[in-house]
Image (cartoon, rainbow, N blue to C red; front, top):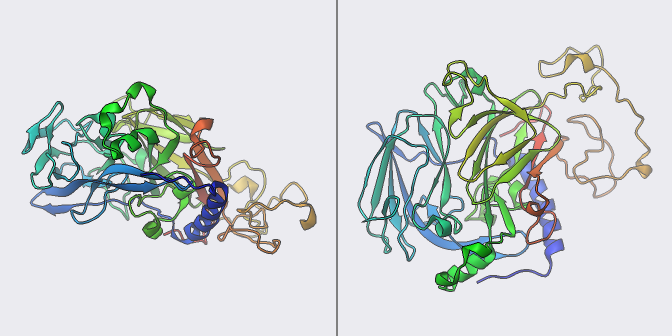
Length: 434
């Protein structure tokens, strides 16, 4: 079943406004996920394949399949992010409540035990319909990094239907407070991390599955018109995670936040069948790893010495990419903090620009066009008068749009703006980030 609203433009405007108000105080600063149960060196996850409907910002409702971390809960798109530690034995018990066999494969995990239960399938053992039989997969998490997991049963159909998720393996020595590292080297150190899992969707496939007409699907006619980050299209990508009751089957947002000078770890995953050029508009990132391995000349001993600076990462199908993003206002040419030249320097400032005035005189208010995310002031963390009802920049931050660099991927069913758009919100150090 599907419904498309005729009020697309108004729905988008309302969603952007509501989302911006909510996200300023509640955006997720660390990757949300589940850690399972840990005992005797084994970390256990219990997942159930289920069906349900997800929402798109243009009023669409689409039939999906997804992995649920709760046998009595809802399906989730994408599946829950699995958080484990290097060297741990990871065990996943899978049940199946949809009407055809499903499974899970774990690309990049080389130390796998033979799965048990269920029925032998093409790539791995499969959980049969009915919800009773359990298939158990087990591996040792030998290498830290960012990984994908997905169904190994009819993957051309079941991945499209939503049976995908992220796996993050923390390295030895990782500590969430004192030693945030993505790999076993200081070159992968970071202050905050964010996940960007890229997928796409052709609604006709989902309509056919919902109607029980799977045999009519022709993969040669595949034509996606929705593009997702973490299971959401813009503007839902920036709705804050604590408000997931608005999108109960799509709990992960894609808004990134930072303070100047912090190191942001971007974990990018290609979980669909198309490549997606992810563009950090206006600022470069440093690509440090691909497919769970540091870009290194000696296996990581010297760190990411082959890291690449770029502003667009082509997120490839089935691949993962880890990058470090920094923003310090270096060489902007004026003091973004608006300090008195005699004020002491802060460690996050670009010292040569300290105390420099903004190099232009701002026009009078009557001559300005005020955008929703303008605080009224050119200075970070500062506010100035705005017209009545103007301005949603509640923290006085700088907003940088991050988006797909393919024009067709920043729409929702041909309606702009949408698709793979999110933001990096740079806040003054006086503004707390959860």
